[in-house]
Amino acid sequence: MTIADVSDKSIAELTSLSGRCAVVTGGAQGLGKAIARRFAEAGASVLIADLNDVLARETAAELSASCDGRVISTRLDVADTAAINAAAELAETQLGAIDIWVNNAGIFPFVPLLEMTDDTWDQVMDVNLRGVFAGSRAAARSMIANQRGGVIINVASLAGLAGISPGLGAYVASKHGVVGATRQMALELAPHGIRVLALAPGVIKTETNFSSAPAQAEATIPMQSSKLGRIGVPDDIGRVALFCASDMALFMTGSTLLVDAGMLA
Ligand code: NAI
Image 1 (cartoon, rainbow, N blue to C red):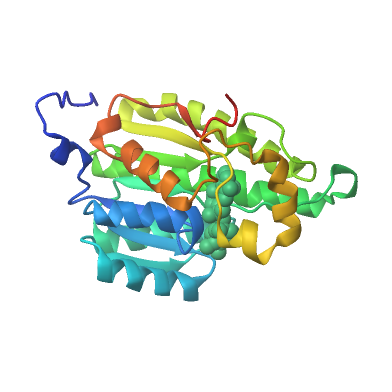
Image 2: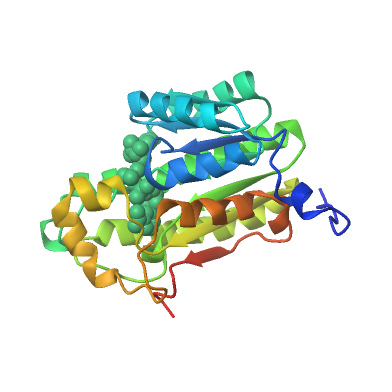
């Protein structure tokens, strides 16, 4: 499948997601919520699929009330492949053919390498890396069956490009895996008109990493070297995700976009 030449389209047409269906894992709060919000504002129908189904329902209701697109929710554990496949089916049944799938759900337990158990390591890999693979596979199967291409966006991290804070060994390994999987999936799925991109956010202030877990927040302080005068907010990632999902980025696949306020500069 060859991608279209959209040179004649207006900016309004290129940034619109009207008529498109998106799934955002871990979209109940944080970066995923900001991504879901910008997608819905751009006109997409969105399924928020999150482990926290109560919060996911609240978020879906909030976004539905304030945005153009329809937003629904379901409970999903991305470490459970059968549940991922069921979420893809639900999106198709309730919202229509899947055009955009965002693998955003992720966990970041702080455990020094010498104290890390196999179980903790496996849990991080199951959610952050196998969950991305299983989500992408479900999305790609659906997109190929519907023959209209699509976009898969993997939320990686600066931790996918460099070692970061002590205690994040499994996280860093999982996110490096996400960056590699993005490149491989891009080349395997390109013939089907499916673009695959990753985002590498720097430090973004969310409920989890700053309020409810002070010890974790403390551990992230060495990373807070934003060159642009403030720490990131979730919408800094939501806007870039919208760009990637839209036809503005139609000629991009396989890339990992640094969204880090120059931290790695
Ligand atoms: P968060 O903890 O605020 O939100 C994560 C959401 O994912 C929650 O709603 C949670 O219920 C859900 N979730 C957790 N485990 C899940 C599972 N197994 N299945 C489905 N949903 C699950 O996290 P935040 O900060 O919004 O992070 C989102 C993504 O962005 C993660 O992949 C994270 O690694 C990445 N990231 C975050 C950065 C930050 O500074 N906040 C920086 C770089 C990357």
